[in-house]
Amino acid sequence: MNERSSVAELADSLRRELERYPEGRKLPSSRALVERHQVSPVTVSRAIAVLVAEGLVVSRPGAGVFRAAPFAAAPDGAAVAPAARPGDLSWQEVALSADAGPRDLLAAPVFATLRVPPPDVIDLNSGYPHASLLPERLLAAALARAGRRPGAWDRPPTDGLTELRGWFARDIGGHAGPIGAGDVLITSGGQGGLTVAMRALAAPGAPVLVESPTYSGILAVVRAAGLRPVPVPIDADGVRTELLADAFEATRARVFVCQPLFQNPTGAVLSPARRAEVLRIARAAGAFVIEDDFARLLVHADAPALPRPLAADDRDGVVVHLRSLTKAASPNLRVGALTARGPALARLRATQVVDSFFVPRPLQEATLELVSDPGWARHLRALGAELRDRRTAAVAALHRELPGVLGAHRPGGYHLWLRFPDGTDDAALAAAALRAGVQVTPGRPYHAAEPPAPHLRLSYAAAESPAAVAEGIHRLRTAHERTTV
Image 1 (cartoon, rainbow, N blue to C red):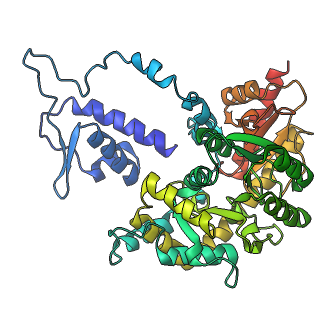
Image 2 (image 1 turned 45 degrees about the horizontal axis):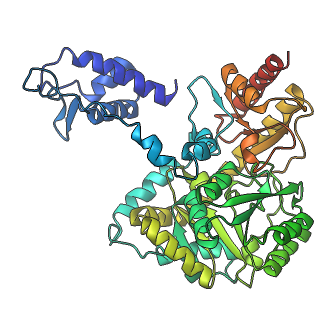
Image 3 (image 1 turned 135 degrees about the horizontal axis):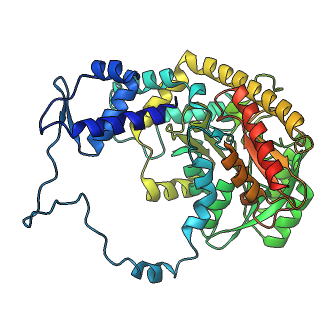
């Protein structure tokens, strides 16, 4: 049974049992609850935490868990509700109408990628690997050690811990590369880094060049910052550089956002010839290249040697590089790094300190402990093997169940970009897939303008196993058949 559903069911059962308990009565021990309900100790602990948060029980370390006092009564005898009934909120519609537009519409694609499906739905949507693929023991040990480090709870430097900045500098640029610890700014994950970079490097209302298609979170950040995304088409070798040059000339943009490695959603890898062209074209335009290197730690076990980051070959400060550990480690380890040089770094630093001051030091200390542990390299190798197996299962299932929808495949990353016949409604197909028991992502939100064809993005990292990937694609075929009848 899914852990989330087990916790919810146990919490519901305990709520019903509490009705028989007077105030202050002690609940059965955790061991007794484990035996009675046939669940794990972790499930019991989390269910009790739910009841504590609801104010139904009180946990006293060393003594046990006790029924809490009921809500106090009001003078007229009515129970005092946890929150008063809200007043008239209609005035907010007028107050918010002066904004650039509804923020919920901008965030809708991001919410979609973060949505946790019901237990009976196979997740082929999320970009975060399944919990079984994450290094939970390494993370727990790193967090415990970090909490005992001298000064772990002191205020950190605003740019981040020097040792962590140095680690990112070596990981991005190499030991003898152009990037030093002084060129690195620790950020709150990749999305936080993107937000800082957009607001720092582009003036409000300015055009920003983006790959087409591109990660929907990039488009959301661009629009939320009051910027205008301008699409530049890509193919199997990455962004089409002749069109990139034309776009710079036509728009006078000063920022181009790209994902040169395992691009989301297509999986494209920027070819060697185009790498040099991107840097040359941007330099000639007096523009920055924001390199979102989100998937470098998600390389498959059978992938060829990876190309270097663009930042490692940049001597002129054109590239602002973004790297994050969240996908390879945990969605909760929201630690990333921006690298830049010159006035651009000063602008990034000023933007971040106004927004959030700094990334919490205990989180940075835990990250240092994690990447310094010999188990981190072993985890990355194991993750690469698991992703390879899920990709192999996905490709085989697509050829069997939906022949013709899969384009050229690139080994690495965690997603496949599926092209469906003209006339297919990708949103309707995704909705039908959810009803059939598999969650996928429609292609429309990955385009800054009108999409040239109907697509779905299929992410195999979040599935529990290769067999689950294959079953999810079988359910997708069922949904496709139902929508084309």
